[in-house]
Image (cartoon, rainbow, N blue to C red; front, side, top):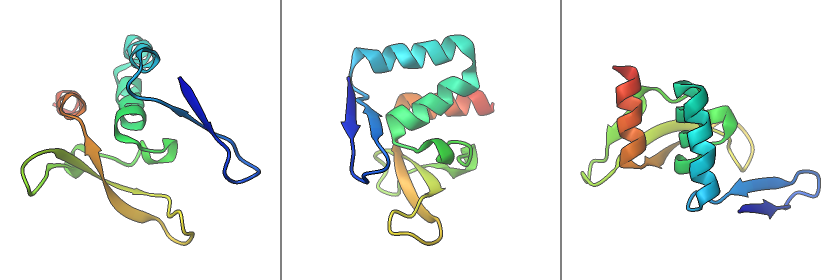
Length: 105
């Protein structure tokens, strides 16, 4: 199900819930078209990246957390307070990390 968020008055955000069947279908449709599209959809759907952040991540930015319990991806993107872009760590599910590593190799 798509969640609608209207917080600016001029823009409406549509957010897809990553835990529903439609999300899996969307990912499968991207996979059927192209591996790069599948990874882009996984970044947005499973990792919470914005569309303009998808082209930035690389395998070099994927790392195992220092606590040793999850994959993290360094992402440079929108600063919600304005100004220059900020760098943040996005959590990456195991299946997405494996897909990135397979694609790179």
